[in-house]
Amino acid sequence: MQIGIFSVGDRSADPATGRAPTEQERIKGTVELALRAEQAGLDVFATGEHHIPPYIASSPTTLLGFIAARTSTLRLSTSTTLITTNDPVRIAEDYAMLQHLSDGRLDLMLGRGNSAPVYGWFGKEPRHGIDLAVENYALLRRLWDEERVTWAGKFRTPLQNFQSTPRPLDGKAPFVWHGSVRSPEIAEQAAYYGDGYFANHIFGPPQHTARMIDLYRGRFEHYGHGTADQAIVGIGAHAFIRKNSQDAVREFLPYFDNAPMFPGGSALSDYMSQTPTIVGSPQQVIEKTLSFRSYTGDVQRILFALEVGGVPLKTTLEQIDMLGEYVVPVLRKELAAASA
Image (cartoon, rainbow, N blue to C red; front, side, top):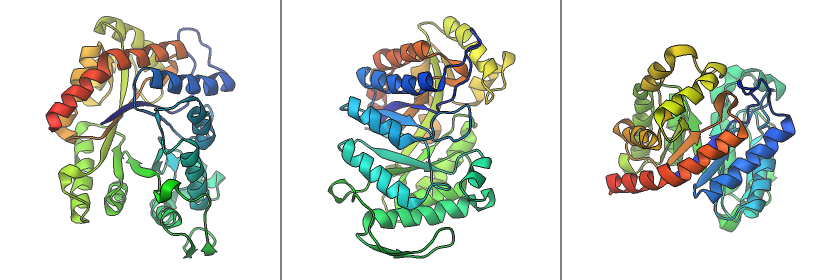
């Protein structure tokens, strides 16, 4: 079981002050989040990939490489690497390089992203999203698994006897998660290769997440990688923690109103009842996270988003400390006992 945090790198203004961090403040602040995650005893730090302002997470390998040099135990991941608009040759080489620099503390989560304009900026078309994800990943796997690759496809120039460099560390490619909110084709892809499936259910109702995970588990078994219970599942959730629930709700409400992905207003309690968003005391975070198991089954990774809607760096660092001190030790114990 791995428990950690992920950042999407947005620069939303703090509703309490009206001020947004500068790009440099946000970038360096993200590094601080990762360092604090290791200090707090968390397992994973993950960063997204976005190319639209006000996001600053445009270069995950640069960011994670810098963090790798300043950490020693923290597992580093993406959340997401855009398999649709990145060249798979570039992904193969960049992440193999990062795998070496981090002494193997690296995996990556592949996804299509949620910003249609990005496709055009990188010479692709949104209507090809699924086909790009399928073709590009098939090539990426070959680039990591085979010394020399001759290949031809639909979306990039052919390769003739090509060798990507550096080769994966000790001949073993980085572990891959396939992240998706709504696309059954991605769950199928993860199952076909025996990779991990990350159900990014931070906005969706539990029923939808359950259907996607059940599909993945069934197909994982169908392709002969193990039983459905052995399939490798990760989930995401929003959290905001204070020592008592009243303080948590009162403090979080302005961020809930400010974040474009939330409905805002007095709907917080309804929203929490319908999604995996958790706002409350450490015990409430523990109880709701454990309740996910009723529809996800055993999972191997849980990542929390702590900084939506302009939550300032100082507050996010406090959230990480509370996760590490009060929440994660109990979750590890309870989840291990439940899966024994």
